[in-house]
Length: 120
Image (cartoon, rainbow, N blue to C red; front, side, top):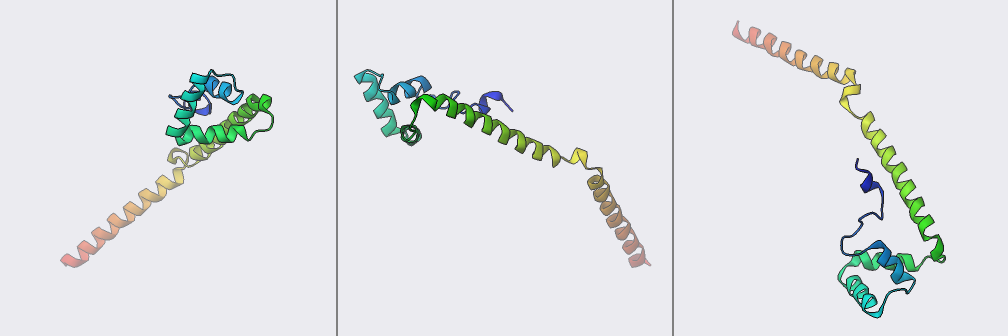
């Protein structure tokens, strides 16, 4: 899987820059940029939800720590799901192949036996 997908803040939204989002939350944007950000929030529910969630954080200085924790837990979850998926692959299950081939052979033998008895 692409490592860029594992980083929750990398290119998360093409319309908004993550630094711009952080600057908005810390009131470091100009009035025009503030207006543009609020317009983006009105147009996009995802941006609006992100800003609301980030505003609820009590300690804004720990925001980077929170994002790192989220990234790490996301990577762990993706690795866990990947290992589960790898376990389900058929290449590691020769008994499944054997069972499928055995069932097909039994069906073919049954068909041939029934066909022979039907002709006589």
